[in-house]
Image 1 (tube, rainbow, N blue to C red):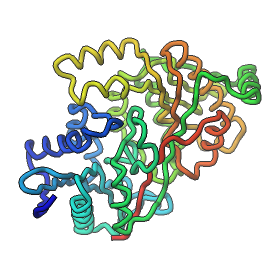
Image 2 (image 1 turned 45 degrees about the vertical axis):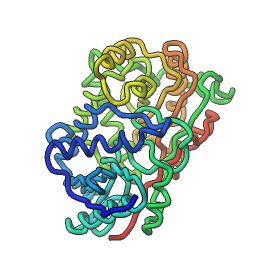
Image 3 (image 1 turned 45 degrees about the horizontal axis):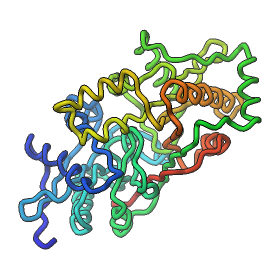
Amino acid sequence: MAGEISIQPVSGKRDLAAFIDCAYRLNASDPNWVAPLRSEMRELLTPGKNPFFDHARVQFFLARRGGEVVGRISAHIDELALAQPPEQGMGPGTGNWGLFEAVDEAVGVALIRRAERWLREQGMTRVLAPLSMSVWEEPGLLVKGHDHAPTVMMGHDDARYQAWIEGLEYRRAKSLLTYELDITQDFPPLLQRIIASGERNEKIRIRKVDKRHFERDAAIIMGILNDAWSDNWGFVPFTEAEIAYAGKKLKPLVFEDLIMIAELEGEPVAFMMTLPDANEAIAPLKGSLWPFGWLKMLRWLRRPRVTAMRVPLMGVLKRLQSSRMASQLAFMMIEYIRRNSIANYGATRGEIGWILEDNKGMIAIAEAIDSFVNREYVIYEKSL
């Protein structure tokens, strides 16, 4: 496509609507792209609704050519990320861009350079990208797994983007992996013995979450998460507002028999969160709940029947992470949820992730249950 590319900051409701719509238009021909609900996208991008804005500076940009919107990008600086130790990936001077979509390479290059310029103007000296927008939302660029649709809360990118980004002297900072497994198969005998041993241990209790005490259990899970992940690369702590926000958004997808909390001598020390793959229900809606999508989703939420389950979060308190107990608790929670996923939801496959490429403990658990890498996301870095 010929013509001059114009890149301008998003200003006002009309621009924001165009920013949201851009992704739907540019990905319309990709059979594996799942259109998110437009109402959720508006909430994600709106200060006052998404608590990410409480601790972040954010600027959205639109690319136009011949009056037509041909791309978009966000540039953002998370003040909580700036306060993290540099050796953990974030740290002082580190900004981000994300929500990247472009019709061709010329537009993509222009957008990334505009985001970089904004970050430099804000005093940043380094960029980690893409992050859309927080590391807890959709981090990384999909570089493996374009041949199948993502599960709930995972991103899906045009395969061309990798070459465009790497052509701008971005280098890989970290890979994030998702693992797939056939949950209809029993685990190997050794794991079954480990699980049985845990069941005989009176100090261990694996319990379901209780939706009657949702706020209590959500706080327990987030407390374990903030401790368990605090030394991980890319970690940014959840704020109280974000914990409440995440709880509100996830509550419709919370099913008591799919989320487990492990207690050791009465103390909550680990958790495993599993979600039915809502993308299977969302994909046919093409981003809208109207006119009858809301009814279809309501029916689905009452009794989901799915092919896949996703484990987006799992954690064990740091003081236990190098112990055999940590693995035992993980295997027990995985097995209980595996059984429930088959019996109560008809699921046949599971997806665990994302997992950092150098998280040896989690990778060992994933490999022990005969899972394999089905998707890889890359977070890139570049000096500004």
